[in-house]
Image (cartoon, rainbow, N blue to C red; front, top):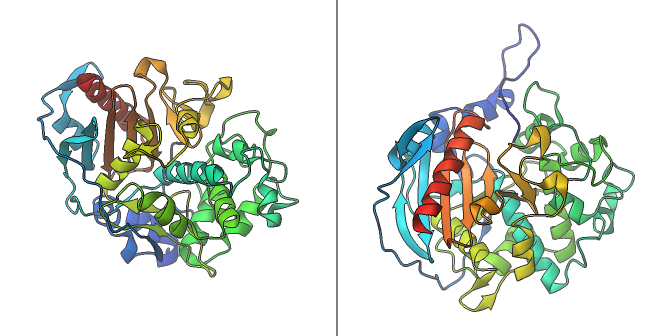
Length: 393
């Protein structure tokens, strides 16, 4: 959630190679409308298989003839799509699709969308399931209980709860500026076959454990590795059996993998799924973890994702790596009681899974912003999504 630019720093006189420029090329408009819907053409992947039975989402389409006020001007939902480069938009109310549109040039109901850091919220759901099954003992367990290769690193002594709330104290402000930041090293390793785990093990401690919030892709990536170590299964295989089949997904999803061997899923930012299936995940969270009478995710885990009692995770208290209208809890961004306990998953370039459990509204918005983060577009989007939830409430 930091302000980013994607300009590689190269030695004078040396033209950038494909490997050095590939992330810039696939992220740039208008190319990103294609790449964000075809990531399986660009990187190794592992399938998250759906089950034999699809759980239908009934449809009762309604026109969204409403406006939201932003920057002292009234805007329509069509304005929102144009101004924030929407590619897919699905609204559920009481589990029914009341609005669905695909403004993106390559998007449709069967299109798998690159969800970037919204993947972190999916990882949190899987952690909750693993805790309920006993594969993971407790959120008080330490990283090194599952990944001994992190002994002696800055992650030694951190608990899963610290990772879930991004209060590990490991790493500095996550920024894409320059070429030597840890997140840029991580990205290059993912795309070019470097040692991703080695980069994370080198990350320094910059704060005491539990002292402050610092948005961290590394924290979320380590969570995914802990889950794989605890269950003895790949992230994709576990997600298929424990989540995707049980929500009745329409299509297989997939994780993007590293190019290095052994390949590993980028659980912190490379989950790809259709907008409808992502809406099914939101419906699960809106319904206290229940699907068709089955408790898929523990209810207390879902409620943990709606907000924390820790002052440094409260709305407006996150500091430089969060926006003022967000708090944080359990790999989800919280919006506070004034928004009916709503919370949202977020991904760069404008990916949203907005859940309002009181209004029983779920909204999926996928986008292709020109830049990774955009405070103005984010604020406008959240203003519009709140307005839609209020409308149906």
